Length: 360
Image (cartoon, rainbow, N blue to C red; front, side, top):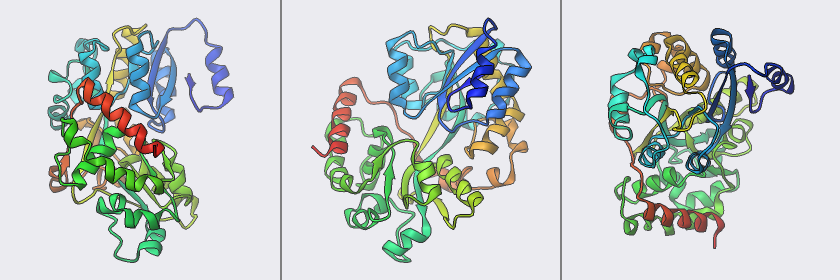
């Protein structure tokens, strides 16, 4: 198995298996129990080449350029939708996916918004985008009544100016940050017209100078180590930071909050590129992940909810019982979903996002 971030020894073992059947998988960073990757190889005899990315934009660039060399990729729902329209994926052969019966109807109903009939994809994980706080540091800066469960913590410049002293990271993801800013403004989170979307410019421009870094993965360790006090990020990442801090016993106490105004509910979907080198092995990998035991092992490791109903009986209590991971019905009803912007709006958003981050 070749896995980005693994030891050199492991990479050399993979290299020594030259000539064996291979499957190339491209997934998000910090997003799987590595023991599952070894288990897949042992059960199938297929060499797994596993690479990671930390933004949908990076994945999309590779896919739409063609010839990515990957057999399985894991885009988020809004990007999946756009990529299906662009012809980037092939339909799944569900006869090769017997474990599809394990999937959760409630999640499949929601992912149909991006993939009608779920013909091209299967859910890997889902979650929310919210606020991670080093609660003690935030209260030191803003007081005991700090609005840790409100978007005002992030989008009110008065709060951000003070929080800058202990460090704030924000996702480098306009498809996540802009809907949140729209929600803060009382606008439609899934606004499709650019006139509405550009209302976020003054809000984001005002807080950008206080953001230490726009990045979509570094905030995990930064939170866990106490290097920053606030992160706007993905639920499971922040919960991983919480647990890393607890394991290190470093005095850092991390909390995850779904903003009371509403938060994005997102879905990461396993899909097969139209030009995948090994379609048969791709189906084997997806079916392997859909096994109830394997899906549970993945969620127990990364602290994200999955779309596999059969796995729920196998989840650790600190996963299935944590409402930050599996929210209650009232919280789910306050989560919103978004759809892809059309190409012209997307180009304008890309320019706007670059302008906001650069401050020019």
